[in-house]
Image (tube, rainbow, N blue to C red; front, side):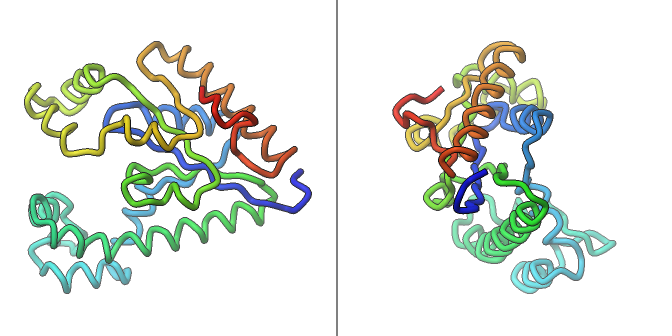
Length: 220
């Protein structure tokens, strides 16, 4: 156990179709506790929640369905290509997502755990990696991502390329990562990397009170 009772938060991120969810599931199977930003994001916009109230006030009833639940597709059309509208939405949701994440992390800590994984797509884009204890980035080659997006979302090649081009390049995320998982190969190859990183984090948290690699220049 860490001598100073340090609780460690490890970020997990990647690019579209890089395999972040696959890695999160593998980490959970090994025993890691996972906080999923997407799950939190859905909960905070449920009818009656403060974020739902603010979104309704900011964007009107046209972004709600008949049952008052948030119409994500309609809201997406409003904020897509409108930088100010997107910033407004982010100002409503991001602080509340962060608050819920910290509340969940404290709950996990109170259960006797010493580290947790925060699974989120925009960790680097939002600068969250700067206060996390360490960062795992799941990476795949661009052509692999395009193929996966086309198959998963039934998109054309051009649509998949457009989706990738709208995101931060994976290279920029890799540049600030403590651990990098190459997810171009088989599931078994990915699993081997996940197991190695899991053990490195476990050892680091228990012996050094940190999730940083022992040699920070040696990324997986």
